[in-house]
Amino acid sequence: MRFGLLFLLLGFAPLLAQNSQIAGMQQDLAELRNEVEKLKLENADLREALVKQRNATAGNSTSSEASARTKAETLAEVDRRLKQQTADVNAALAELARRVDAALAGRQPPTTRPTTPNSKPTSTPPSTTPPASIPPAAPDDGLAAEIPRTGTPYKVKPGDTVTRIARQFGSKPEWILQANKLASPSALRADVEIFVPQPEAPAR
Image 1 (spheres, rainbow, N blue to C red):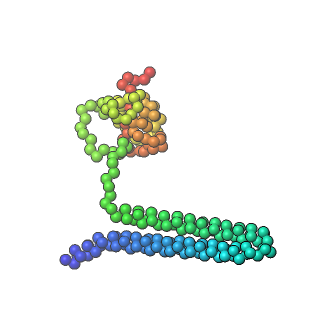
Image 2 (tube, rainbow, N blue to C red):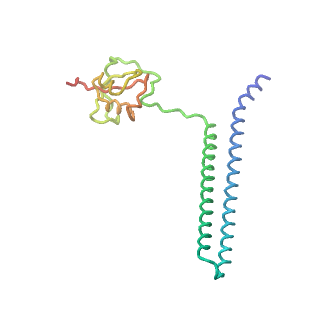
Image 3 (tube, rainbow, N blue to C red):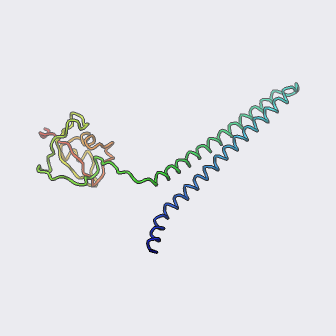
């Protein structure tokens, strides 16, 4: 009975730690929002003070144009700094929200990954044809018409390149890239089985 309770507590330990981390992130998010509200209030107070100062000096005929220009520049600089601070806080808020979402998403069960053309098949049905020849692919396989539907499977070795494999089997690099859904030659990986298209008659 004691061992069962111990295993149960050990199973809940990661979940409790993750909940504590999320709670800390949410607290940081609330503090950043408070900082944004304070900046908005300070901005409003500065604008109000500058408006009052403008109104007070408007009736004074002796106030110079240079003084008014200096005050306008001061107001613009204060406004620019407040906007910059607000943008920085908003960016921090967005990053923190992204981290919270990622932490929450990590608690969901993982989804099964779809198989890709480069992934190794879990099981291969027995084939009655020689491994050097593959029947033509279906016409709706999404390949270009000029790519042969016949070819051979090949397990990529360390140091292999698309060009070298194409030269070895009398194929073309672009055929190999399209048949295996490779974005570029650098996407080729060792120890992965690929399909090398080959024309039915050897090229002369």
